[in-house]
Length: 231
Image (cartoon, one colour):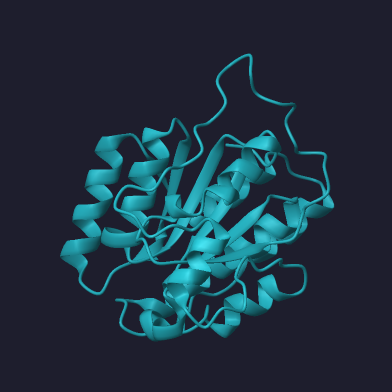
């Protein structure tokens, strides 16, 4: 997993969801550090919101990290089902994730390209696979690995991870940046995603794996993120 072939996906960290999550302050803190690290190193970032009319928008401390350069996928329709349909974020039981390009078909790696705007996509399906435009864009930029974080681990995160794996993506999961209301749900989901083929990692491990080398200006910024005191 490197900065040149990986994107960050932030799943449903919304105002009416986060407060119910076990250890939610630490989960949000780690997600924020992943967003900051991705922006430092130029990784593409996308975020989703599950039925935002009912569950609210992305929490402010994360939304402000995305606001400066994001391109919201949502439209102005008052009907969330209509909005999701217009976006291509379809409410169906088994969403279709864009299959990852195979060896020989993959475009040039996009690590040296400037980062495009972050995206926040509304959805009704639990899986982020209902928003295939996110993954089609990443594939076109040479991305074939996704680091997933967000909530809830056993619902939207798990269904997203399983769909991405089924479509051939390499999926990484920052275990300290995902959460559920109850520990049994989170721990069971982590075991299931691990057994299905996702690679489990942590926020700090991912940040330094993206960075790859010491002695650069980016490394100094990543080191500062790693040294932040936990909430």
